[in-house]
Amino acid sequence: MSETRAPDHSAAIAIGVDIGATAIKAALVGLRGDLLASFREDSPRTTSSLRDFVRSVRKHATVPLLGIGIGCKGVIDAATTRVNRLPGDLHFLEGCMLRELAGEDGLPVYADNDARTALVGEVLWGAARGRRNVLLLTLGTGVGGAALVDGVILRGASGAACHLGHVTLDIRGGLCICGNYGCLETCFSSRAIESDYFAHIHRASETLLSLDDAGRAPTTEAIFQAAAEGDPSARRVLDLAFESLTAALVSFVNVFDPELIILGGNIAAAGAQLLAPLQEKVARRTSVLLDRKVPIVLQNNVGHGGVAGAAGLVFLQHRLLTI
Ligand SMILES: [Zn+2]
Image (cartoon, rainbow, N blue to C red; front, side, top):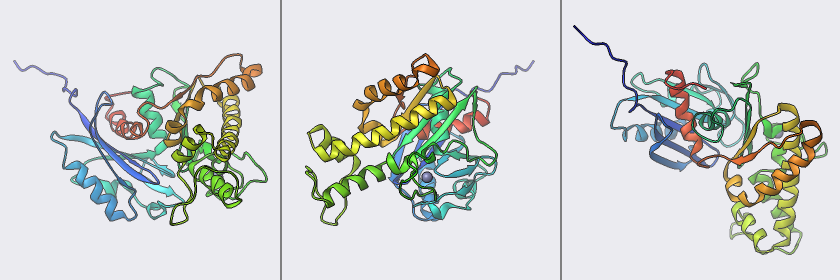
């Protein structure tokens, strides 16, 4: 008599890839969201360098892979993995099918917007486990967003829902990468913070930092550090940037009524000490309508959460995990 056993997926692994504006990251990821090996390079500038990177990661897998999950900036068609819209440095990927770039030997490839994959990671293994209404913002070179609403990740009619970085905060504001003016991303992002600090240097304000030999502005991390050391220009720039973020979060709380807001990205890591004041201001300004405090927390494993979540797409597709 033969015995039928359910397949053992406890050792299942998938590759998660996170394509960002400054770096591409990948990891071999286990079913518990554990990163078995991690990889990172500067962002690709050609399709062949992206293909080569994924190939090199695959060589490190010592057991059969379930598939590859990819989180990518822009508007990604999750059904086909086509990059529908992607302005900026990664524009060369627009129109590409990620499954054709990353998949070989019939290995399945799944893809979605990078903020959504980060949210998948948090819902499966991180701060949002067991929650049904969650917002996630990625605060880096730009600002990405994703929302879990009543247990479903919002996609919208064309997959473009929840570009939270592109809500208009300042009707007199500067041009944004999206073609709109005064978006959150033009007020709070690495680009915005570095550009505002550059203006302070240019106007001979009191600053601890200066341009480098190539005339480039200091990095956001350096500006945070300078603010902590008493640089009045850095403090002014960051105070205004955080006022913008506060205003946006208040609006998001009123629109989405979330249980939890998760902040990810490099700026969230650099500005962790600013979380408490942010939390306090958002709570005060939403208290009349909401009558409860929405916790604002940092993404688990900032910098690596995206790759785990991208691999999560594979586990969800194989029904090894559910949201
Ligand atoms: Zn915009």
